[in-house]
Length: 585
Image 1 (cartoon, rainbow, N blue to C red):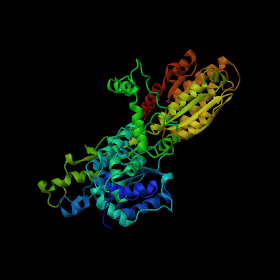
Image 2: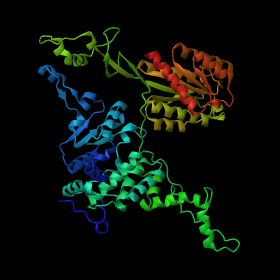
Image 3: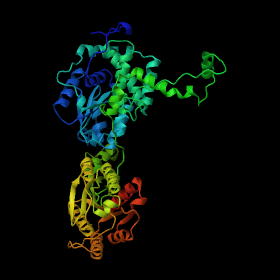
Image 4: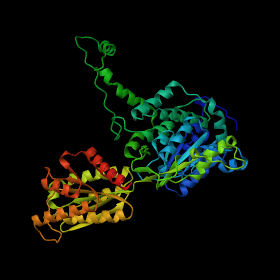
């Protein structure tokens, strides 16, 4: 089916495909769009989409899957060691990127993709790799593939937008014609200006997003059989490429507000005609004049002219898929030669617990065999030795012991909950486990066993009631018992105690402030003897001497809440966890 472009006025309307079908069609027409992030769990809908997408490709056989822990030699290619040893000469091995050329590379568990691997994939895209990437994101709400990769994939497809079984897909002949005619499709400067305007209004900072939107508009026109980009193509490109990257909404559109009323015309003065005064205002306008302040309204009107009706309201309501990206930090990782996940090798000598990488040692020695004249034997020298390196993730857990007594409720328990939520979020970013204990009355209760689930931790904390006496010693003892249990499992615990220091119930359950204070100090000394890293946060309205003394007895850092902001709390937890990790290493 040859590509027969027609003028825009005579062209048929854009095909009425679902968003997921459009994404598949555009990627099959133009591989330079990079690919798509599919945020969906494994299931029938996702598998059906991937199978149907393969039928749109020019070479369905070039469909490769990549595990997240792939090595550089398998991804990029390198020396085939077995073939090299057999042939007696270097034999190259093709990488997975080369095998997927002109096809599709599926990235399994993309949310767990190492930053280094994502950087290599991003570099391959920048160098013009002819491959379409599908990143399967099965992570939680706050998890996402690395930002370097996300920025180079044009589309995001959430689970709710996966095509239903009865959706219409473009026929193979139409896709073949669209691919053949893509190079004939043109766009004017006005289309680029409109897409740039929308990107600016949505605070889309990446230039690649605008370039992707232009390419998507051209591909949409090719699918529809048009030789020039039209209004429908611009709308589609803005919806599929720019809106998932939006960081803010244009003023006046976030909640579907009515358009602002036009300002009244200036009243003429000194008998001057109104037209003459208006012309003079337009000519002499300064940055503070009414004409200058109308520019945002003009920009909003330009965006409304190209966006489908109600689209911004849908974005504000959260029904449009939003992108999330994680950074490239390596917090919580300790490099060494002992244990952990393999992290490559380096030249070195055997000894002091170092382990020899036989494969890498042979790989380093093989290219020199001709010069070494080994007589059909492999000659290995000391400078060929490669030592294994490992990267062990610091398995840390933060145990929050929260004072929920009556005095704490009076002294800003709500603010203490807010501080704990900030700390929980910081721990979640570093992929640490968290646990929450609360003590009040005469007991301490584990509200949240060790978990990675941030939303669950927040719900438990929000429902935490306040009131009753303060069994501070019981709470410290319960936190210490949990910390020691987790340490026996190989974790590195950090105890975070939040209290106002108003202890009035002893370990035996009897009231009495003096005995309760003595028991609390004894429990603190037991934490110090156990070698537990700890942080004591004073939640009283003013710093309490007793809480500071308790921190000293625990060997913990003392942090009064009135002088601690979110950044200070986060830094304190990071520093304490880093210290415990260094001790473990």
